[in-house]
Image 1: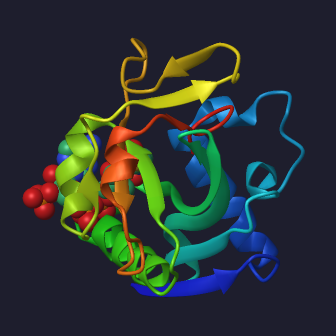
Image 2: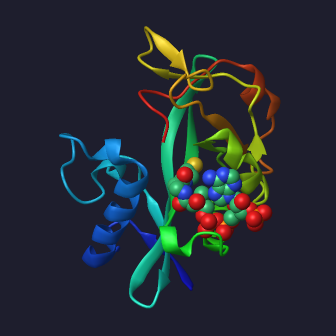
Length: 186
Ligand SMILES: CC(C)(COP(=O)(O)OP(=O)(O)OC[C@H]1O[C@@H](n2cnc3c(N)ncnc32)[C@H](O)[C@@H]1OP(=O)(O)O)[C@@H](O)C(=O)NCCC(=O)NCCS
């Protein structure tokens, strides 16, 4: 298995189609009438693609994205880990850990805090790569006027996990203060 870090715009068109299929399998709701082709949902997020291949085939994928959130009413730039997915037949063989490790290394090279959202059963999977669980924190999503909490979503509860560079001085505020991440998590 080979893992490549690929700048946005440099992902070959065949790989784009394979990534689309992988992501569609895991998150089909992304592909409703708003689908405008390619990796459209990443367009505004300055993605860096982490792609695992075996031969010519994409077997695993995730992206490091750049976005901003509102912490205690103040807008902050952050990085996000998005779309971690491994082809069914290749699961359970370390591919997921390998792509997350590569993405985590990239994130550590930045001075920005980073965030991901996952199902509670995947906390240990991300902790292994150095992420910390903020399962006791509350994250608001949706419209600013009427936000919902991510952790209490009855249909799809998610846990926030974070990764801090040594340059982040106050990590506690990310646990304690009100965090609004925008229209949806990633
Ligand atoms: C999550 C996912 C990326 C893991 O990929 P993978 O290649 O199977 O992962 P690895 O082989 O590197 O690691 C597997 C480890 O993670 C754990 N793990 C993987 N998926 C898990 C799940 N859904 N629930 C609990 N543990 C899980 C395994 O138990 C295993 O632990 P072990 O080594 O102690 O046995 C893959 O299952 C997948 O694509 N899932 C669908 C998309 C998804 O949910 N992505 C996560 C978005 S936050």
